[in-house]
Image (cartoon, rainbow, N blue to C red; front, side, top):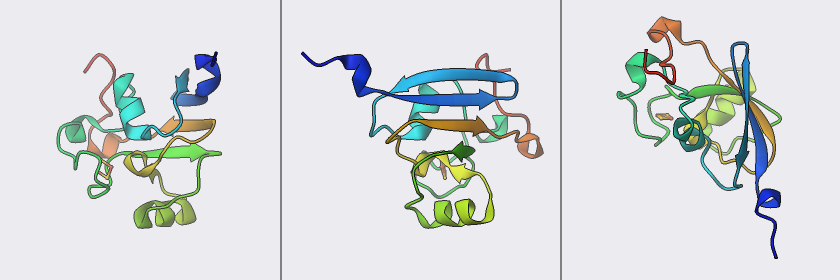
Length: 115
Ligand code: FES
């Protein structure tokens, strides 16, 4: 019998002083994982005004430590120059730490409570 726990990987999400550890099935899209647990990668203004995860709007950026190598042109440039990577272009394949980015320039990031 397969142990379902062993089929997940640890994704630690750092949001300011808070850390949340998630168990994620490999192959899931990072943006979708974050939205599903109300840890939005978006600023308040872009929560609804975004490209829906198609890699076009550059509003879903997060900082990733020990994540997968980039395989999207924007993500490659972001990683190369130290900018936040597009969470919609990242597939969870192994353990990683994700730091949510303070996006006050676009209005503060929407919290789980929507305020
Ligand atoms: S949601 Fe638009 S680039 Fe990621």
